[in-house]
Length: 360
Ligand code: NAD
Image (tube, rainbow, N blue to C red; front, top):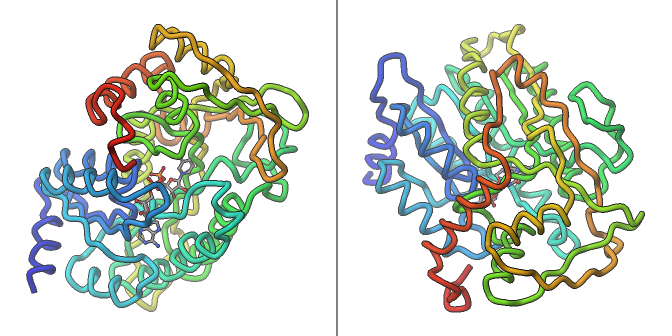
């Protein structure tokens, strides 16, 4: 069919010993950047995304158009659809899966808990079932989250820490994902790498994230809302620039090893790995706002309100030495530079404050 022709042509490899990757969540923020990076170095890349409406579809469709311009085809479909997955794996022999599709956001879970169960747990199992029975089995790299470290964890967070019960349903589905992938690794010899991303920002970023809405409000002369944590200590977050995260994803893929056990035979030595991918230097929200004021050369009006009961007031500070050692991971973009790049993109994409006219 023409769909399969598009998929095959997108999966074409342009370098010897290249790899073929199925990227889920390819129309998303991180997925679109990773897909482009892999394609541009000559890997075969096929994307899949269900274009969920969580922060609107317009930005996802534009990212998809950009990917298709660069030769990456994005199938409009759901990871939780086993027939779609089996069609994809019958059409292309994927060596790797980069699983970035998820229901993201924290507050949204209060009203929509099952969206998280479906896209972060059920979809993961559907994907693992497909990978388990594929021959050869692809190596899997997937996005967990820094939020799996609970509010009471000691800092800086290390991969070997025992983690507290999660404080949000989103975090809870990611934690569950880690356990499920570990089980598939043990039972079926799948090569698994889970990446605990901390707050990722940059061009083509997510409009639901705080830094994005801060910048949007500032450019429109509107006040920003800053949340005061329940314990009244300034919130601090780990911000990591998208290009740095992309390098971490690509290095994870390149070191994941292909689990080559043919169907039926378990590959006992397939790795199960977890890496923190953050900056290693937390920034408080007031410090972030000061950087924005300097960057935009504007004074910002602030509304400070108390964090609601379901709010995520965790403090993040991450130890990245494992990723440094094993992946050669080394974030190089500081917050000033990264935010400048974001603002440049924002003004290019939305035009000078006309954002109300765009569906973001
Ligand atoms: P995003 O929402 O921009 O991308 C996720 C994409 O997955 C979206 O385009 C969405 O339409 C798609 N999707 C959701 N459910 C799907 C399903 N069932 N089938 C097919 N497609 C589906 O978010 P992002 O920021 O690019 O995040 C990518 C991954 O990284 C996610 O797994 C997220 O949980 C994780 N993560 C992100 C951050 C961050 O700061 N951005 C931090 C920690 C973890």
